[in-house]
Amino acid sequence: MRKKVVIANWKMNYDFHETTSFIRNFLKIVFERKINHDNKEIILSPSFPFLHISNQILQGTTLNIAAQNIHQSDKGSYTGEVSAFMLKSLGIRKVILGHSERRKFFFEKNDLLSKKIKMALKYSLDIIFCVGESSLERSKNKQFEVIKSQLKETVFHCSSDEMKYFYIAYEPIWAIGTGKTATIEQAQTMHEFIRSLFFNKYGQSISDEISILYGGSINELNAKDLFNQKDIDGGLIGRSSLEMEKFLKIVQS
Ligand code: 13P
Image 1: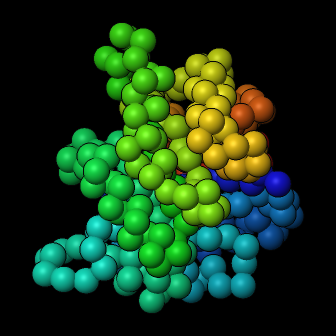
Image 2: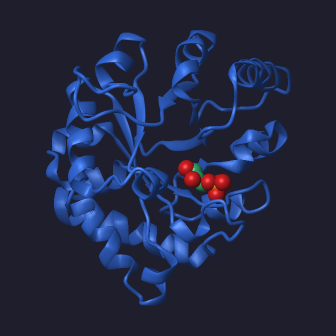
């Protein structure tokens, strides 16, 4: 069955205290208010230094942790970098790759992302792979072409057997951090298109199974309508995931 997924991408925001107290409070509230999360996957993505403690706090719960990046090698002279090999040794099982902020500020292109995917798979990490077009590309009606080539040059190098490690996140760049969400129709149309690409490449069961998440200015008011669409299986949340009550409402949506 296709998974419903909500991911908090905290980017470079919370410090040690904020990260750990958010997670502890979140667990407490979910328990106290009896918030049903049986049928969905909740994933939190703190910064590297706090992955270990976050993972320890979540031991014995159904919540998971994802890293926000990995290097394309497993070891070596790459000062300041963190590898899948290291994450695996901490018990981290998921990583976000291809986020548009990595593409924009750290010049990550599809060929590099393809290497990072290989490395994540070598250590059996699940991959939340992000795709998305710019506003210029959309204004030229090139969004479908852009998403297709982002997938073709990365994820689609992988085998059918490897698809079980993937979640796809459609994050139109113009909607990230701008307060400007894609309309329900724009989002659903793109998700349906992405699913059709998986159908053409891998067939019915993989295209049915793969979770395709939307990201870009999701908040507690628009989450429900987005998540009600047949091809939108959840969300990758930035700013609204930094506020407990907003994030809880999104989870309940
Ligand atoms: P916002 O929710 O802040 O727009 O960020 C979306 C995002 O980049 C999640 O990865």
